[in-house]
Structure formats: structure tokens, C-alpha cells
Length: 124
Image (cartoon, rainbow, N blue to C red; front, side, top):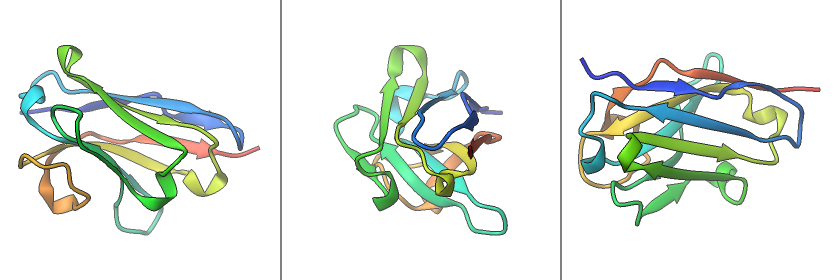
């Protein structure tokens, strides 16, 4: 069973930064797009950012543009989400996901591998 393991979540003050990491040791990592999603209490999981397996195609949701940066290290089977200028509205559980197809997309249904999630809380 493929497992994705997120880390790096926690409590941060507004305006602060966090770097999330997602390790995918059992995945054919260097052939799959990877994404980050988040989920607010009582809401559907929503797209944050995605990156193609080469890193050449990157897409962001509007709330993430200019503040978040996704990257990957295929040699380490790891994808990252650097989050800067965090706001209380960014408070959510963040999930790493591995894509089922070749393209980096924003659709939850295009991702077949999921981590357990990591809590990010932005509060003073």
C-alpha cells in the first residue's frame, strides 16, 4: 500500500511561514504529478497547488498565488509546500496527493494517493 507522509504543520502567527513536506517512499514518484490540497472543518477538500513530475508545470489556486510555492525533489521522493504570509484563513488540514494521470491538475478526482493530513493553524 502506497503511503504519503506529510510533515511540517503546526501553529504559526499571522504573517509567518511554514514549509510542508510530503514523503512518498512507496510511489513511482518521478512519474507522477503531485498536489497539495486543504480542508476546512465541514467543507470539501480544496485544491492548493500542483506540480508535474518534471516540475515544468505548476499551478496554484488563487488564494495561494504569490504566497505559496510548491516544489519537488525526485531524488528524495519528496514534495514541498512553502507557505509565506500566512493568514488565519489558511488554517486547515493540508493533504499531499499523488496524481493518477500525467498532468498536474486541480481536481481531487485526479489524485489516487493521499496522505493522512497535517494541521496548519494560523493564529496569534
